[in-house]
Length: 416
Image 1: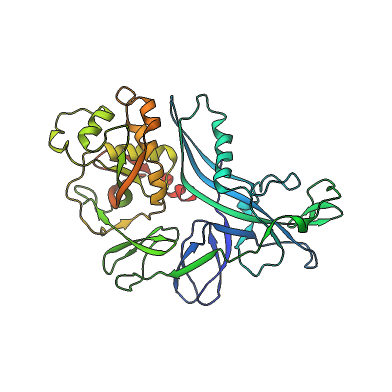
Image 2: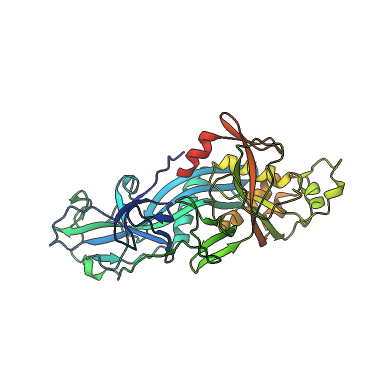
């Protein structure tokens, strides 16, 4: 299993220019000097370069691109669901003359967001992010005993990192270690003949103010959904700005006053090949016991997926437990009053994992693997639901299903 680390990124407040250090997952930034809150949004994908470089300013730097991926890969096989946490880098420009990866460098050195005022030559990536993800999949699935019939990434963080190099004495030199990293280059090698791009600002920001009432939006630094406690609204970030999110919660009936509310995406979806429109269909698909379930058998079926980062095994358990539970009645359509865990797993990634969730609760007797393989799942609607978990000594416990989450696991999952 690969241990995961956070990138450290040098940053300047867009309002006053004060210096700051961000982590890779940071989105909501509050300046310690001017106290202005800003929300960071990439133009496409987050792009960085290493902040420190040893060579003299007179040397022409050549910035070589690498894809970095961090997340969990789920693979559905005939034996069950395999999963693995990955933190890998690979070349975004295929060349035998440059290092094949960044190693641990991206985890220990400071980065800066890419901007248009950085001198040097930036090589144009010729390997797409989808091709890079395919390479990462092969590294894992090649070791599986059975071939995977479906794979999905969850908790994915992808970025493009430019590492500095320079050419001297017909060799590629590392711009950070200031030493040669290649053998002698061919005589015809010319750095100025490589495909290059003009770097642009890869980041934009907007004020973290409620579009409805203008109040300050609240959230943790890595929050993907911001909350307004003035008008009781929730807002999901996108490249175009803020979009309103339908938000509700389950009342903490019988739970302790110190309950922690964990966020879940409740998703309505169209499933082909397998009839899964109501909870009566779920009873059949998952081979659930039927006594006492007739009264809610015709209720609409929903997938439930954690809206927060958690270890892969617990992600599967929570998805299965909440999806198979009695459909909750009496959802309160407002933000709950109490401790809220931040939403830091995007809706798009939760939707991408619905097939993994389906494979987790369906039975081979009622749903053959061939049907699962051919099934297509298309989300139709979604809402954000906060579910209360009782605060016990070392864990949080859901009263309805008995599911328990270790406090240490929840805390350390922020690094995934």
